[in-house]
Image 1 (cartoon, helix red, strand yellow):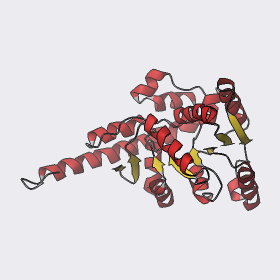
Image 2: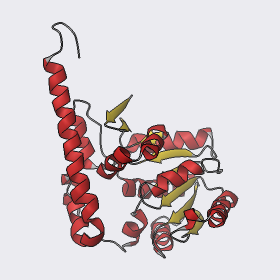
Image 3: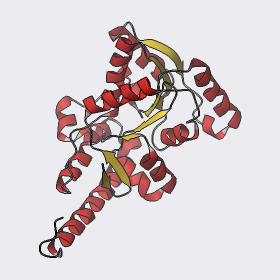
Length: 261
């Protein structure tokens, strides 16, 4: 049963459970295009104004909480999630699993050179990692039907078990939803994870990650690019959380005696 937060739903699952679900999906069908989404506060913000994106997230095969604020929200609302499943950490874990199980991986998107660098870092750590392809299409390739078709065909020919899509939200989720016919076992949007794994972008220290302040670190690193996402987006997230908490309190106070919540 999923936890609902505004227009986003989240599976009650931790990292180990996520890895198990992915392994089961690949064992059942290596070409099912099992879609995983990793919601955070930004997803909540986008879903409020983009009904198509909200529907895509709702229909994903697996929805895991990437952001710590969502864990806090789940506890405040009385529906605690078992743990955070960070998208970058999930990608790294899947690379390790892929090396052990022989799964083929494909790195798609990211800044120029980021996919190649991330793949190289992961292969250096896991020499047995099978890389079916590395591809960085033009930034506006989705607007050109021919370029989009050619990108999809390259993936189709490679037929990877796992496709890491680094186009950023909501672009990557929309692209995945439009290409569920590809012979790919698992599709996962990973945002800026290639840059983080490759060391192009410095990741926040572990203490920032655990405390839910990773957003502050990223804002400090890239203020011009991130200010709107975090300052505006986090304010909206807090307003939604406050409204939901008030609704929960109001509903509890007006619940008839003897009726279980």
